[in-house]
Image (cartoon, rainbow, N blue to C red; front, side, top):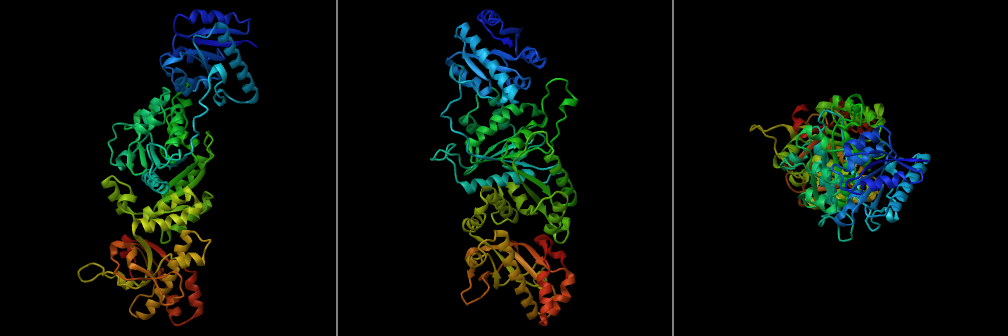
Length: 599
């Protein structure tokens, strides 16, 4: 077989090279002598040659150009000079082979023939040029001592409609950074990456820099992609582009203007993702909403990909976190988005975690979790989505300060939900352990206070009175021992049910209270909560020894009005009514909505 060669070689040796190739016993023919990269790419796109022989010093030869040659099924052989790091740079660009430019003509011809034969073998096997490794021996090879990346990558994506994707991505990275420890200059003493890295890859409206309180005029991702395209990006270079936001957490900011998206080609970002895995144990990429690939409608030749950053991140990720908003419009968009994600032309094989953000009863009904779960189960086949409650006050405070929820509102309901998601991603078996550690780190514990609707009535001054010390319920050691296989959410549910039973007893002792049970969820100082030592047979029971103020209340759960008859009957001792109450779900209300419950 005769191999057609495209020659783009600079210098006095170009003529001798062409002569040697043309004289290779009829097995090689020089199809085109290209003056620059543009002519080389045009010839490759036209299907003129099978192998491109290029000079390492050829202007505008970068990773994107090599990727375009590979897309045209053209193999690339680079002529390099031993000095100046040209060999390493060419291999970083993704060329198929490198040869010393001082090699004799016979050696050059042999290298071209070897590359052509390898191309034929891969063609028969169905593999493309991009699937091959550099030829060993005199053709060059990757460093065998280079450590394989060990970090994991999470792509956070959500459909259009501002579901809070960037806020979730930043805070998810912060929680993962806290769970895996504080990094050194890039790796841990044992050699593996530690900490977390948040990358803003939203090419439509990236906001990570603003959320983190950074200036957005120096897009780190564009600089990293540019270095990757030139073959100069390594671990140290990426570390210099990623400032430390907080212990263990680095950030790679995105483009400051949407019209700069051509600076983020997929061929360069693939290198960024790989090196990021060596820099951090967790790389969290905030992706843009759009998944379209319509470049072929606008270009007759190779086209830049408007959504290359998002598609590349989704393809490279180990986990894809899909974020939707907890309202009817947001759920509809989420269902359609999951369908779009499943039909992408790029292979997305990562595990998917569905998160519904800003969950609130005012937008999703009195039982938002049940309603959202039923809708996603019916229309998208999603079981048990993760729910993040609407916590506008906590999120706004963190945004105003330019910090994460972990730093500003450690007891925030949204922060706790995101921490649970991070625990499940890190290692599902450690989710409960992390939740317990959160209590020790923050000095706060979540409790479930039995109450009545009279506790919501304001005083003459217009404010609700503080809640007096009382018996409450929490996830205790005794409760964990009773249900060793339950997850954290199940244990919290058990504690809240026990608090609902205590609320019924309070109603029996408070004749004037409306006949509806009320359980208030609060995050209080752990010094104010003590395990009961009076022989209490309820394993979740604790004693709250200090007043609970309303700024410590996260939310409330209350019976629907129709439960009043069952409550009355249960208070008279009717077993059937007690069983009926056990079957009823208490309705969730954010603390800001408690005034709307009424009597």
